[in-house]
Length: 226
Image (cartoon, rainbow, N blue to C red; front, side):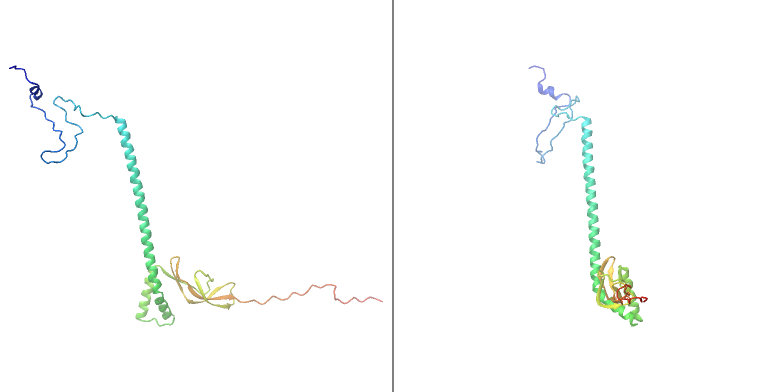
């Protein structure tokens, strides 16, 4: 027999043989293994010949990272703008829903306010009822309810409801001469127009008739000396 080492003995070396298991299925767990992109260098420090070098240079890699960063920043800014617009719409819709609910409640409560006003004008709102009436006024005022309609206001068909029309002196146009029922509004929104009596200017007397100018027609002839 020859004493020369075989090829298998040369591959083993002083540290034993190097075994690379490239099976995709783990024989113990029977799970699929992740593909290995790079293998550890051998004892001599040589790279695995199966691993291909990265063709992209460092400058190109920096440009790619900067482009990706700009895209992610733009996406984040767009997402933030969409969230701000969404929050603004939600707040607007919530405020509108609150106003609609408040207007509906106050509109149903207007007959109570009319009864309180009528009792106060006739001196019937006294004692505990006066305290209740004052509390009702404070609550409605707190929520922005305002009454309008004053004697002497110019008639405005947008906020006044004319129930009668009477001639009036001292007015130069349609004027509210009597407030039959006050109107109510919240902000600029009119819940009920004021019901009023409208005074119209009275027909004035015609001015004095001017005398006709003197002329020679129909005048007596002057005396002529004989």
